Every structure is written in structure tokens, then in C-alpha cells.
Length: 261
Image (cartoon, rainbow, N blue to C red; front, side, top):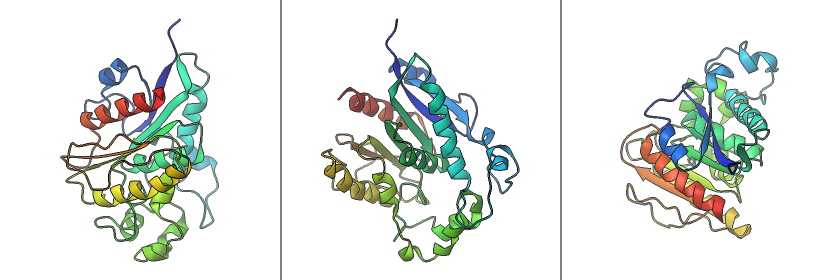
């Protein structure tokens, strides 16, 4: 029988393959399976807490979970199913997301150690970018527009990021010692590529404690010059906010290398 293959769990903005987001042929050609689910099939991306998973959970206290937490929970439930399939190597399942779903992927991996790797693409504020000193989207801006993504307590730090009891690099460090890939786009200033790179650098200290090489690169890289030699990888590409073929072409070889070590 064929050898069980590695897999990527991908919470998507669409329930099926689209050319810009899910290059199925390229992924499968490199030996990977792709498990896709539409995040809005879990619970809608709005302030309505009466549909889907949101309708089954209590939300009344200031520290109750928001919808990013619910989508992350769904990633783990997809993994539950994948672990029952003989075609899938359960020890080599990664979780990957873009934008709000990049935040989701990081939170899923932080909570569920069964994910063997995590990839966060253009996740910005409340994702892979350091909050303090960040340009573009701030805590106040993101909470004002998307309060339903977070617990209510998060709004207290709008305009007061220096009072946050944590920083986003600590979320990245929760992936240690598993492979972590952070990616940015040069025109996506709202997400602040430099602060995402800084977070990857700072998270590297935790990887070193585990005896793993973190991010290999002290200087913000030029576009299309990925830093992939460590257990943490980073790239910045040309273009704007999106998950494109170039991103996947960096992720899958990085996973193949890390999973074969």
C-alpha cells in the first residue's frame, strides 16, 4: 500500500479550490494532502453568535472566546478526523492560514500540540506581528472593526499596546520546537512585514532553548529571498495582501525538509 502522506489543514475563505489560494496540483505533486474547510461553515464571520459553533457555546463574560478561537477549535476537529485515515501520516500534519485565518492557525497550533508545523501568512495584528511600535493596523483598529474575533477584554489595550501582558512573538514561541513559517508581502503595510520578521526573530530564543535553530537571518530580507534554513522560516514577497502560488512554493519544500529531518 502507498506510504501515508503528510497533510496541511487549511481553513479557507472558500469551500473549494480556487487558482489564487489553493494550487492543488502543485501541493499534491510534492507528496502532500490538503484538508480544506470553509471557516464560515463553522461560524459566520460577523457579530452573530447564534449560528454554527457559536450557537452551541456560551459567550457572556469578558474573557469568553471569540470567533478566531472557534475557527481554531475547528482545525483541531479536522485533525481528529485526519488521524483516523490510513492515507494520512498523523505525525506530519501542519496547519496553515492566511490573514484572519493566519491568526487562527497560530492559535490552533498553540493549543494543539498534535499539529506538527504551523504556517501564518500575512496575519498582521493579533497574528504574527509584534504589537508594540507596529505600523498599519493596531489593536484599536482591529477590535473596532472585528470585535467578534476576540474576547471583550482585548479592547482594553486599544491605543495602549504597551500595557499588553503578552506580545505576539510569545504566541509564535508556543509553536516551539515545531517548524514555523511566517510570511509577508511588501505592499501589505497594514500587516507590517518588519514587525512580523521581528516576532520571528524574538521567538527564535525559545527554539534555541529546545536545541533547535530558530530564524537564520539577522537582517530583514529582500523580497523573494526566503530565510528557510532554520526551524523558523520567513519570507517577504512582492505584492499585496493575499496567499498566492509563490507562498505555497516556499511552504511545501520547507515542510518536506523539516519533516524528513
